[in-house]
Structures are given as structure tokens and as C-alpha cells.
Length: 109
Image 1 (cartoon, rainbow, N blue to C red):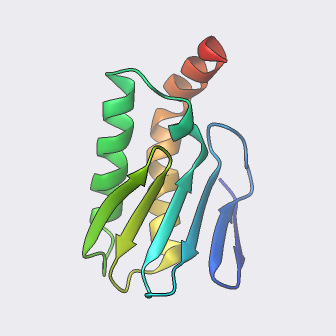
Image 2 (spheres, rainbow, N blue to C red; image 1 turned 90 degrees about the vertical axis):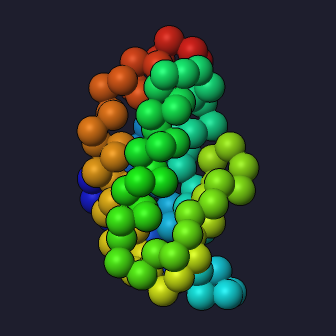
């Protein structure tokens, strides 16, 4: 997954429904995460695995103090974490689940 860094924003250059993700710096110094596929995945066990994997991966990034889901496809990250490290952690999760996510999105769209 190719990552593009623009000022205070990191974007996956894949930008599709499955691998599309954006991390942005918030005014309070934290980060916000927007994950495209989270809008579409609405059934367990895949939804639970995706959400648990996101929180686990991002929480393991140095500097992350907390990860809170704000809405269906948005999470807020508190702490002085690196946007580069957060988007790489997210990319790892998405690549690991890519086949399942792709099949789910294809079946439900």
C-alpha cells in the first residue's frame, strides 16, 4: 500500500473502498482516522474483527494514549503519535483482512 504525506495528512494512494484510509492531525495534537471500508462492513464476525484489529494495532503505536471510535468510519487518537506510524499500522490490518473485506464489499454493494 503506497502512502502519500501532505502537510498534516497521510493518505493511502490506493484510495478504494477496501484499502482507502486517511490520517489527519487534529487541532489538539491528536489524530483522526477515516477508514473507507468501515462504512460498508456491518455484519459480525468481520465487523468485530475489523474494529478490534484497528484499535489493537493503533493502540500499539508509540505515543498513542487512547483510540476512540467517533462514528462508523472515524476514530480519534489521543497522544503524540506519529501519523506515519499510525497509517502503517492501519495498512497492516487492511492488508491482512483484504481478501475478506473485498469479498464482503463485493457481495453487499
